[in-house]
Length: 74
Image: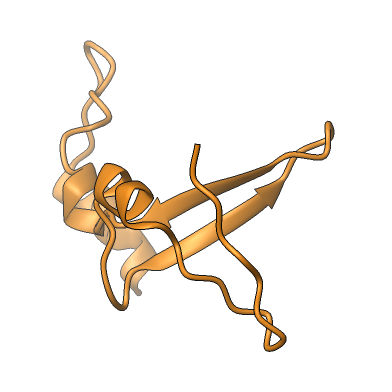
């Protein structure tokens, strides 16, 4: 288990083993989500929009025409 100390300015240094495990570095953004049981989940926002490509598969038999896709851009 790793520990960190909160400074008077509200800053912490994330321990090196946690930074390695989460694959985070300088300038990476983190989110903190309070849970109902009082714990807080810290997540690294390291994914780009391009990382999501191909994540969702279309339902069989569904298709969208180019003109339908363009409808929202006018």
